[in-house]
Image (cartoon, rainbow, N blue to C red):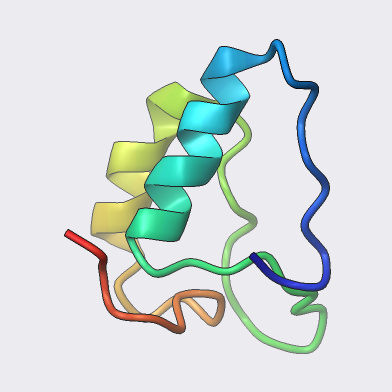
Amino acid sequence: MGRSFKAPPAKDIEQWAKVEALFDAGFRFDSYRSADGPPLPSRLSEVEDFIRDNPSHPLRVAPPAR
């Protein structure tokens, strides 16, 4: 997941779905203060556009899982 990953509450289904979608798209949760790139989305509804709009994001370090 990455060094900076903080698990959402177990009952927060939307946040877990967001984490899964980002992870499956190759994003990892590491600190990137020195690298350029927009912050990861805070809501599940923002994830699809974020993934499409950020193919070279510094936290996208793995190939998509699907």
